[in-house]
Length: 319
Image 1 (cartoon, rainbow, N blue to C red):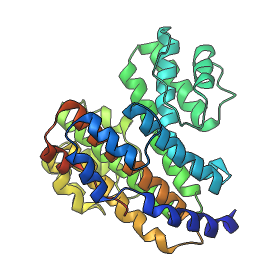
Image 2 (tube, rainbow, N blue to C red):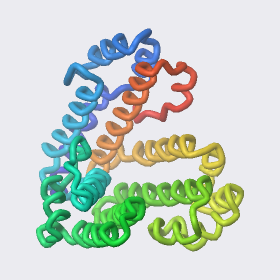
Image 3 (cartoon, rainbow, N blue to C red):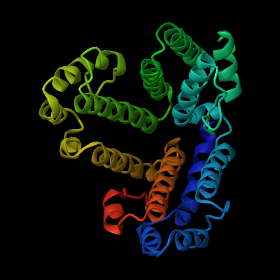
Image 4 (tube, one colour):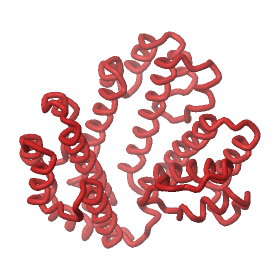
């Protein structure tokens, strides 16, 4: 597989001119109406459907198709499919236990078929699923049957997703994937603590909800949350993410923007690493960020939001 990395790096570098830059985003923002925005987007080659959702789905599928062409082993980028897999697991467990027919709740793009997840949740037979999914799904199903607490079920599976993300990062033969997984989980833990402070969750919530990662010490984060926002920001300043303390104080949206910009900083250096998986992973993450920004602009146009408000939420781009 490593022999494919220089080829993969060359292919994604050749596609960099096709990535949207700030100028293209400005053109989208300048469009007077939602329909004008879609027309401008199609002019950039984003023409995979009639609606915004169809277009964005088509662009996501294009990105995955490129990765599959470059790197035939689907396990290499499995960590990027984990959020979808665990979202679908939550939907499957709730649907099976409540006996409500699932409609429009499963997301595309996971590594596990939603039908397989639903069948396992209905029958309680999880042996056909991989261990990383079978064990937490079985626990979640049991918990929901015993307590009827859908929120506790979500917390259990969300934590399992974070822990599996960390394991994927540790297994990956690519420093970027390890660093990305660590940042992803650390930022998720911090946001969970922020929500707990904002919503006055009971003291039992954080020990159950937080994953354990190297850069954010779980016990210290729980202690910090007891002192509210001031405690969280004070603790964050002592971690490798100290530059995110100001964003955290501004709220979840600002912290999300800080995290996404940090990812962009992380992946830009991979342009100079043609003999690793890094350039392909960087291109994938750049595309994810790009699609998210276009989604944000389209949503703003559809809902009549002010341009200034949208500009303040836009992230840095890869190019």
